[in-house]
Amino acid sequence: MEHRHLQRLDDSAYEGFAQVHWTFSVKDRQTGWLDELFHLQFRVLLLHSLSRYEAVCPAYCLMPERLHLVIMGRSEECCQKNLVRFLRKHSNALLKAKSCEWQKQAYDNVLREKDRERDAFAKVIGYLNENPVRAGYVELWKEWDFSGCMVPGYPELDPFSDDYWDRFWRIHYP
Image 1 (cartoon, rainbow, N blue to C red):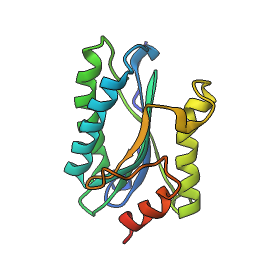
Image 2: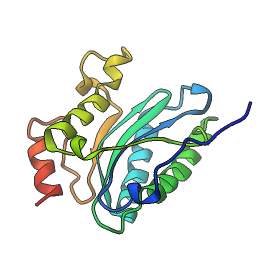
Image 3: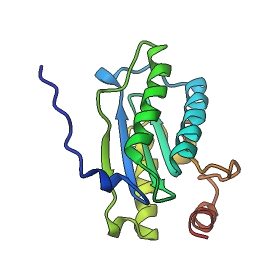
Image 4: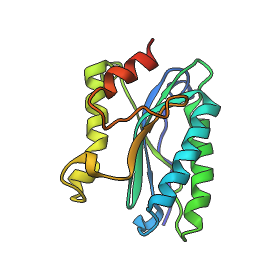
């Protein structure tokens, strides 16, 4: 079976203040790797990745056969392709310890200007957060144990709190 690479936009679409919804799928849709330990280890890797490449993650959702995350650049120096390459490399090492690995290439959706407006952006995040509900794992997205956000320097930021968006926008666009 021939493996083709997904076509990517020009590198500049992933640089600077870009906002991208990334999906990593587990090869052959294997399950059994997702547990609290993996979640905690993933959060550490995500924090290092975001800090290293000057970005934030307003939402992520680990699913039994894939993960979704939205990444937003925080500076002109941010390069999400490098960030994702770093995150995939190190999280793949965790998966290999469980006899799994990520598929060859992540899927991405660079958000258009209209999707980056506050209300539209919150809907993108809402759609991401609803993945466990659509899959039938939980009735309410807030019941899913394997989702969250990561904004370096703000460990108390809680995507499950009612004031999340007010706090997030004050942090991200002071």
